[in-house]
Structure formats: structure tokens, C-alpha cells
Amino acid sequence: MDPRISLVDQGCRKVRPGDTMPPVEPTRTVDAEGYVEDIPYTYGYQPDLDPVRMERALRAAGIEPTVVATACELGYGQGLSLAIHAVAGGARWYGTDLNPVHAAMLRGLVADTDARIEVCAQTFAEFFARDDLPVFDFVGAHGVWSWVSAANRDRIVAFLQQRLRPGGVFYLSYNALPGWAPMLPLRDLLMRSVQAAPAAMPLADRIEQALRDVAMRLARDPSFEELHPGIEAELRAIRGKRTAYLAHELFNRDWAPMHPEEVAAILCRAGLRFAARVGEADGTAGGAAARSRFRREYWVMGESAAALAPQAQPVAEEGEGFAQRAAGCRLINSRLLALALESTDPSWLASPVSGGGVEVGYTTMLLLEAWQRGLREPDALAREAQATLSRLGQRLLRDGEVVVERDRSLALLTEEACALSSTTLPRLAALHALTFDT
Image (cartoon, rainbow, N blue to C red):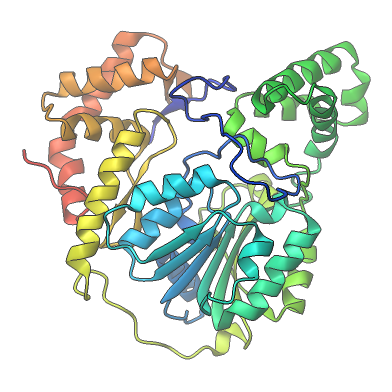
């Protein structure tokens, strides 16, 4: 995908049949402890949960990482990351997520592959109490640290002490202060509005109503901006986010951005040692503001990280089971391409060569899906991609400008389609991600 081209997020939308936020029927009686259950999470992929990326990050920091044979993801959402890593890599994976819809989605993605994976829809209290779990080499938690109660954070720490082997690695991403400070008063207003709405109203509708109500309140009373500088800018920023994201990011009962020093104190008391901050060594962390709002870190259990002894590294392409992993990657990738017809989130494919995800971009996903169905001409591929974008209410963004004219959008998609057979497909074939007849 041309890096100058992206999508314009059309903002919050109500749940409709076939939408990316299907209604969830109550299927459990366990207390969710204030965590959002009735709106499934987005279909995003988190590359930092990939053990291969972890190994690169630790080596860049001068630390020899452990070989990952067993791994676990806590709060896996729709499960794309866990599915890709289980199918493409050589580790045995475990995971839990509160939402049974997420578990069903993940099981569907890995069905009929040789992935060694065990997933469930259990609370942390239930999952951590199990006596049939192994000791893990790698544990990952993306976002959930900031979205769960203090009691559940304590449970995570106790789980790491019990189940993360010495030298094992913990990946943690969380909302950090002071970056999130301007959001605190806005989030308070939004939560008050949501809690005041009728309980029978679907949460998605309550969130949309809260956004409208708070916008009107800020417009009527300029003193809010005077008391809380930046609150209007924060509201404008989240108005462009989808409800599936906002529900989990801002509307759980518990929401706890933390200072990095506070997080470090908790983890150090548990016997973990800081190893690397994602993005610092490879230059992908972004600007100072972005780095202060979201933290992505790797921590090593037990002994001083720098003292870890070198270990033999598995060979990705020539190792045992590569053919099975390649077949699994082709199967899951076919499912991810089909998913792109219903959601703008999927933009990564699985590769047994990399052992994890390979980013291709959303519009490329649409073109590949059409190619998979037998279309070959660039203009036909572009028309199929444009039809999906129109059905999902999306427009392209080129060099920061919204592409309004359909003809220009088609031209950009056709240009990308022309490079498919000469560039994209050979690259994906070399990565054993997809196999297409030309």
C-alpha cells in the first residue's frame, strides 16, 4: 500500500447487521467487574506481542533474549495477534479474554491449522487460578493494564511471579501520565453522561449520546476550556474514533493511566527488571507527546537482564514444521482477507518466514481479496476495492487530504493494483504468506 494513502475514519456508527460490532447475547454469569462486554473490540493486530519482535528489541538493547517455547496473551481482544503468532510461529500459545465472542472469533481464525493454542473466555481470577497452565517464556498484555481494576492488576503481577520463568519476558503496553492528563476531565464528563442514561439503552447509543451531550455542554460553557485547557481538542480527537475502540479505551468502569515510575515500582517489586522500551531503539516511537501517552515496554523476570546467557535460536524457515505453518498461514490469511470486507481494521497477514505478522495495508488487503477470487485486471480489482470502501462508508486519504471524487479514488486504487503482480504478490510469495496463480 502506498504509505501516502490511508483511510478517513468516519467516526462512531451504530451497530447494524453485518457491522464490525455485532450485538452480544449474554452468555455468562461471571461478574465482568465493570469491563465492557457488550461491544466486541476492534480487529487490530499488535506486532509488539510477536516474540520475534521482542527478541530484536532486547538484542538492540544489548540483552540476549530467552527462546520462547510457551507464550500467553492476557486480554487478546478479537484475537488477531494471538492467532497470527500461534499459526506463524513455533511457540505454544495460551490466552484468555473475558468476552466469549472474542474467543469464538479466535477459534474460527485458527480452525484447521496446526497451531498449538489453547484459548478461553475466563476472567483473570478464573484463568490465574488454573493448575494446568505451564510456566511461560513470554507473557503479553496489550492495553488491559489501564482498563482493569487495581485488584486485577495485582492478579496479573501475582500470575507473573508464579508463571513467568526466570529470564522470561513480559510485554506491557499501557496509558501513561502525564500524556493522558488532558483527557481526565473529559472522561469524567463522558462517564457521567453514560451513567445517567437509561440502563436499557445499548452502550453504543449511550456513548454516542454522551459525545453529543458533552460537545454541547462545552460549546455552551467556555469556562470548561479555561479550567481544563485542551479539553475541546481532546473531544475533537476522539469524535473520529469508532465506538468499538472508545468503549474499551474510555468507558470501562476502571480507567487508570499511570506514571511510568509507578508502573516500574510495581513490576520491580514483583522481581521484574526493565529491558527495553519499544520504539526507542528502532526510531518508531514517534514524537514526544505520543511517547508520553502510550508506553510499550519489555520486562525480564528475575536475574539482571544483561546477565542472561546466549541461547540457540530456532531457524524460522528451515525448522521442523515449517510446511505446516506455511499452510496454516495461507489458511488464516484467506480468512483475514475475507474479514477485510467487513472491517477496515485488518491490514496484516501471517508469515512463517517472519514468524509473525507482515503489514500490507488495508487497501492492499481488499485488492488481494479480489485477486484471490480470480480477478486480474487492475481496473476490475480497483472497482471491487472501491465498492467495499463505499459500502463501509470509507474514503481514501492522500497526502493528508480526503479524496472526495470517486474517479480519483478509483485511479489511486488502480495505480496500487498495477503494482500487485509485480511487487506485492512476489513479496508475499517469498514470505509464504499467500500463493496465487498469475
